[in-house]
Image (cartoon, rainbow, N blue to C red):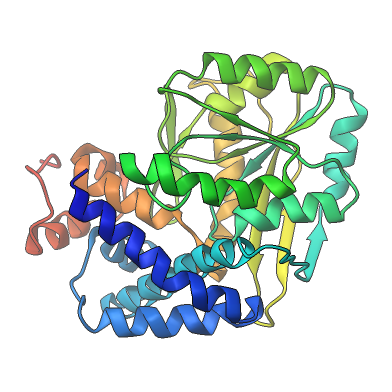
Length: 334
């Protein structure tokens, strides 16, 4: 990373730090929207994620898709401000969280093989999910993570900035297991030991991994890494999808679905479980589209991997729109 990029990255966070310490946490949302609105005037270009939103959600026009994406950006910034705010010494936070489905977690733990919380990637999940688990009376989860998690994916950010983000999250976790140098073997060995001790393990749903599987999602396709499903099947730990969103009244809602069917022998492996997960995810994305981080992953996939969109209902339209703004690689649809 060039030093100028590192300095810019640090300067942005340093500029936000004092105000995040002074403003009540409940008011960080309006602050984030104001910051993003000011920045948005200088950056109005359309991106791949905007295009995916416009085609996958019913009744969304291209301008509405762009506005929705900018609301997601504001929420993402708000999440960053939450972390910065909690870096202030002595500051605590007890948000209002409505929980449902936690009987599924209790039933899983009664089996004695631990439980895997498969966290859907909504904006507020890094803090809200472990907080909800603790407030529901369960032991804090052991979380699987990567060095890139936090403020930045740059080498400078990974080394100097992300540890600050992680330090805040770790207050609400019993342990963090980090995949080092893209080698998950040591981390998985530790996770298996924790599950054998009947602990709760949490893993965020991701689109990248050693093995992935695509499934129908809205008018397109969802790509999911299957590692957590294999971990569940090989350890006997139930895999429970968990979702965290914030409603219009400002209350956070965390729900746990029933265990996904990872043991059925289907081809391709885990396709039944992935379809069941997508079916639970769809209505939440439709209701809270500006809180789902998955738009970024889908935008990246359709831009970088043309063959990924061949099974979309709207494949040709997305390809044309990408081409118009110069993001489409060589057509792979013909």
